Image 1: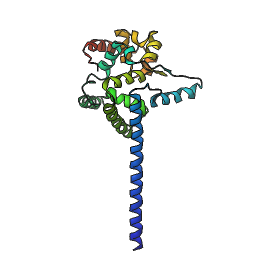
Image 2: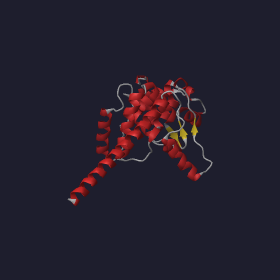
Image 3: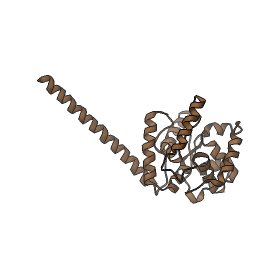
Image 4: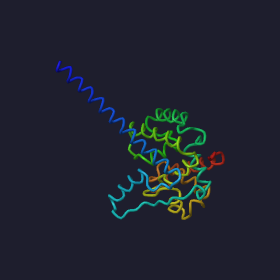
Length: 237
């Protein structure tokens, strides 16, 4: 009898604990949703990725600062918009956050090479990671990224998703967004980027801190040429 009562109490405690965890997760994601709605009409001040990189920089140099300036969609070169879509997510305007064909191709390519050489992430998935997560890789982080991706697509139009992405994407050590990248690498504004400059930035985006240090790296010019050839066909929101 006593054992049965103890078992019943234990089950009730587990039920309460599970309910508390579920409520916390709902509240956590509602906070994400509220942030996304706010960013639908306001500039992003800082992302999780920026905070993570800032911690790394200040650990080495307490006076370190990020290079980051928000600019509206109209003040970002159409060349860069087309270059990033062509390089990162050719089906951006068509999908609802996930390019399933691209993901399958990436899996097959990785299996063939025996290591991770392709990601298959869309622009929306990358934005989800940059806004709320960190560079660390895990199945939990990928699951969280998927949930945030769905929220971004549900709460923001494609144009705004691309606008935010171009403003917060990492382009070097402490360099974030199109305006900072354009001035850092070429001494021009984001609005003034030429097709070749935009293609170079797009080619650097998958590994920006490496390419910042190795701008003559083998393969980079080849990638730039491929992106330039694809840019005319890139569809923008």
